Amino acid sequence: MAHSNKLSRDTPRRRAALAELRNAAVRDTELKVLLGYLLVSGVLGRKQKSRAARLFSEAASLGDATGMVNYGVALVWGEGVSKNVHAGLRLIRRAVHSGQPDARMVLRVAKRFINDKK
Image (cartoon, rainbow, N blue to C red; front, side):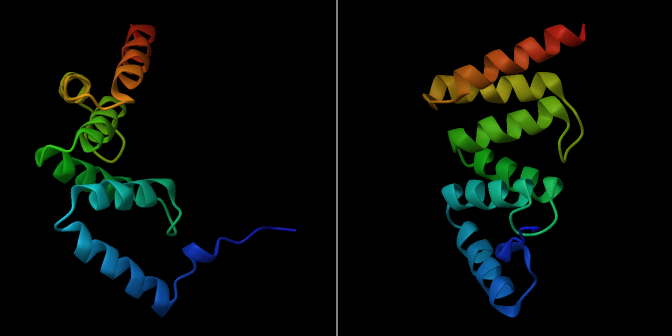
């Protein structure tokens, strides 16, 4: 039996909840990152990598270290944005220096990926 994701169904209630989340995210970097996760994962319907990258970028530009990691990853892999490995690594390094708990591991994985491509 196929499992259907109730969150991905386009209903008035879902659209209203998503609009409320977007409005709240205007003011809150953590919500920008959360909404980005939901969009990039496809939980809310089809995957929206460009919109997710834009939210991660906005959070990063406001100093959110998790936003820096996620936007850096998007840049390194070219997910939803034009690929820019150097800018992505620079952003992930900023997150490491900010103390973001996952940033150091993400940086190692990104560097390994880049070295494997050479």
